[in-house]
Length: 113
Length: 114
Image (cartoon, rainbow over all chains, first blue to last red; front, side, top):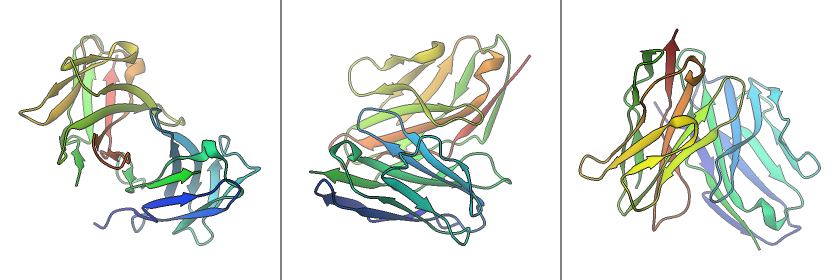
């Protein structure tokens, strides 16, 4: 099966600029996750979607971060405006009810300067 | 290119018995290796990592992992399992000289039976 697709692979922006990341999960996977992994730390769940509904966004900094999954398939995560501390790897993952575990995308490395 | 394989979707073990969750990896350079755990309804939590030094790495909650370069493995172990260890476990690798983006395995569900 095709994997979880993420783009871009790398992004460098200046602070106060905006940025968007895109994720296309494995076909048929109803659950989609966005994780933020700061260097040296474990991944932190930002938001979890079930189809096009939000299940958990308790750790999403909603003053600057937003995410959507309008048609229950692909998803976009946006940061506006970016801060230096947003420099991290942003991982997308998806899962289905039929199989245990996630499939992670390759991630987007964001550097804010 | 880097990759991780967790060959078992599920591991079942009785409480008090030793447990092993398997992980093998592939990187072009030197590996940095990680184990994470996800308890139900919670995000991933860091357990332990291998960067350099002793092949046996000790981590949180009594877990340890052994780095075996010849077998390209980094199996997670615990001498005596607890029911509360039941969770989803992820192995991850990144190339020490690479892009800082880790590659995660698909996860192994550990079920510890009372």
